[in-house]
Image: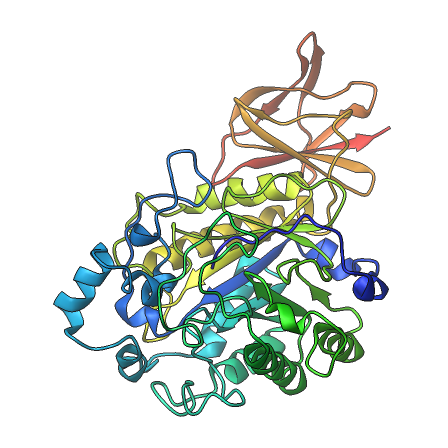
Length: 450
């Protein structure tokens, strides 16, 4: 993973793809990402901080993303390079592909956890920046998980399990970076016109990537095309191997499908942010993506101090929804195909909370700021569901809410299960009396709008 957000105007040939966001995406609120690859064998990165955090200056030699391991070990003197030598010896990155077995992977088991979270869609990586595909993609010459390593079509297994779970299926594809196609030097972000050094950006790679995504569209029932970093410039046109034909193919089989915004100045149905990187988006559908820790790929150096707890994940999710976005929360599977224990605990807590409080989240919309505003003390966020305003409050006992008394019926205050809540109008807003919680996470108080 890496952040790419293009604020330029769409190229004219892509204007015809602009269409209204399907309601399923606006209602979904939560998707689950999966990053899993040969990098999961090493599962190693320095957990120096979240992308976009004030104290995190991105240093590619100390990249906190474990899925960037192939690139990081190519940087002379990097701690990852030293770790690789000490752990694996003088072997190249592809040795990890042959060590990867996925011996305990059960797609239905993973999807059962995904469904428990309340997520409505699921997006696994099909090819990350290391160029290894998790299906027998065209022209990979055996550098895929069917021919080597697990010797399984992992994307096919994910797709079938997602359908059985009744969720929407999408795919992640790294179109802008492929280190196997740019092997001469490490890739780093720059301020230049391209944005990256040594990016795969020629016509042969554009055709190669086009064939991959076309194959994914043909094989699997996709609802989301999630590209990363950019797209090779020679493929941003209406030619045989251009994005126009690729998007035409996708929308033909998925008329209610969506395409994200990381293809350059071509086309998007929604915008994306990553961790704390990216500004709030007010006039377009958007989605924030992040890992439970600082990395998307599983990182054995992370512990509970680097991971979102269940309660922190609930607050993070509610905050994204209150600001009008969706959350794509990532699982970094272990090499054997199982969910790390700490990540599972976070996801189960999130799912338990959503099972009780989901009526204030799923299908909701952003509440107009003139009606109510959130706060940090006590932590409060607001959503709107039909003719009700939902206050999501991380507190017990008396809490004063910043809400317009002319916009809500204060005597309608109640919990989601219908239990009445005492509400008193005062100078500072409306004070509600909350019961003592019996489970982790915020409580929800509902008001009728007037």
